[in-house]
Image (tube, rainbow, N blue to C red; front, side):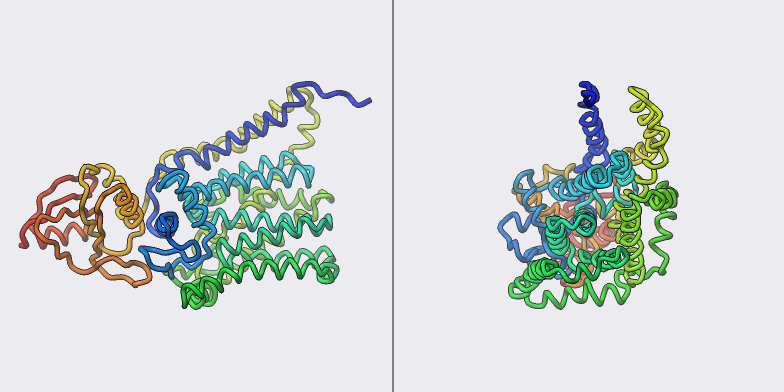
Amino acid sequence: MAQQRTAPDKYRPWLGLALFLLLCYFPLFLHLDTLSLRLWDESRRGVSAIEMAQGGSWLTPTFEGSPDMYGTKPPLLIWLQALFMKILGYNELAVRLPSALAGLATVLLLLWFSRRHLQQPLAGYFAGLILLTSKGYINYHGAISGDYDALLTLWLTAYSICFYLFLERQSWRYLYLAALFILLAGWTKGVAGLFFIPALGLYALWRGRLLWLLKQPRLYACMAATAIGILAYYWLREQANPGYIAAVLENEVGGRYLRAQEGMARPFWFYFRVVNQYERFYPWQYFLPLGFALGWWKKSLRPATGFIMTISLFFLLLISVGKTKHEWYYLPALPLLALLIGLGMEQALRPLLEKMEGWKRPVLLALLALALFGAPYAEIIDKVYAFEHEGWNSEQTVYRDFMRRVEGHKAYTILHPSYNGHIAFYKKVYNLKGYDIRQHLLHAPEARVQLAPSGPPEFPAGTVVMACEEEARQALEGKFEIELLEEWRGCWLVRVGERR
């Protein structure tokens, strides 16, 4: 007769999961709404979400009332942001919550896969902690930012794991799930949502099951349904927004991949170097050889190890060949690499843990986890607790904080040198509260980027103007007599007088 589990043994897994979820909370959700929205993608998505939630088109995201031809990705992320705005209001939390929840779902997916299908329960916990202590993942364009990448990473990871389970177990439900997640990836970031698919074919070839796979009619049915679902959005959007497909081809396919855009011409080895140079996966990259060696050594884990390596290396090669290289493009590789390291860690620690009995095992495991993850976790918490805008755009993202300080002033114009999605977002937020805030640019950028008045300031006497950037302050001071109403950290709120 099997020995009956005691009460502590029965509840120990649930206590472990509860503690793990608590550890997930702080990197993903602590101070999620504290930092003002960043200048480019995050703010632009926020503006589109506000306009969508306020009755705009759910098919064609807009920016300042016109179809957004700069951000040409399908709108799944913006749909989620708009829905959260209807629930939580027009704020930073609504913009970033889809990404944070995607981060949590990715971690739980790794935990589920390693525990239920690989029979390596500790590997999932290790993988989750590795991902949540990776400075590249808990970063802008990551799981704490209102950008596409965390949501895209979730779908790519999900459809890869489902395809692996389908191929290894030949259970059709996993193929159907893989097709669904491919559809969601396509609706999130277009062509980038398909980047893992060729590697899945390579994995099937390595496992000797590609010919079997190609003979399955249901494979083609799933492929057709997914392709129709993705292409349907592009076709419908083109009908409502002529020229959209041409913009997609230029922005996401040939133009961006074959030619360096936005000053992002970088060498082939950029993604392999940036991880070390900026510590984006530090110190975990040094554990990758351990994960590969021990995963390959254990026969039952060899398919999973080969699967992870095939996808990761193919994906990194694919983005390395592309001419436009943004730092965050490598993010989708991190969850599977974290899982590989987690598998290696469990194999290394298992002989030691198996020698322990009773309370000694969880105590030893806690001490080992603290030794491995204590310092990286503390660094991440420190980072999210006191996140600040840094570098060249810090002066351009201080407007929200100054606007909060001068809330007694209900009507003014913000003068700034060039495009600033940060200002566009908070202008909308305040105007929904009854304010009358406008923008004026000193320089006219491309029409697809900004649709605000531009040129030298020509304000009637008595106009109240806000300026936080040096060029804008100099333009005001050089052309008008000004009365300083409020000042904070280089930001001015002034009343314009007579021309000099």
